[in-house]
Image (spheres, one colour):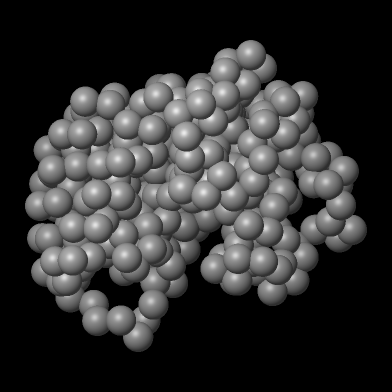
Length: 291
């Protein structure tokens, strides 16, 4: 198994200088850096820039994975045909970029929009039907680009369509693609699942990606989640994918607002302190998971 961390751990915005964070995470003991696809629309927009980032990762022995929370204008289950058309174009353009960068995982609430706006209409059966129909189309491009789409199971405060592994299983079975799989996140699972280890075992071979984070959104080992049980479940299913830490600990900026972090969750949240916590966390999970 490969261990990673999401670059926005260190930042207030989704877009950042990934060439800076690639060697950093290598020195801290990680195998993977996860990037936000927001950067591919704002900072890394040319083929030369995308290839530069790929080569930087390869030169440092780092694997890149990607995540994205589609906006309301990128919502494939919208009732508005114009929004669906724009969303489909967005993903159809994004997937070849990931192929060029040698990125093989795109995870997130790709089946809807994020974060949840409770004031918006919610027709769960109808939204699921539209989402599945359009995801089948996107799956063909994902297969051509060899990018697995991880349907992230989100908690009830961030999404309404897929809140449990069981619901995600029904969704991917309905789509029926080798490149549309289950993505779990320990932070969300702690809210929604009756038993986190049982959910991991239920996902089994269809678990394509895993996010790690404590119930307080800090790095593993700085909270109360049952990491030994989680590790045993991963060993039981012989999980070989990436386990990427997704802590959010800084208030302020777009990330703090969208994630709802209203105070710094780390005392004296300097970059050096965040580095120290990250280094300790990857050592901790490598030991506890034994994978």
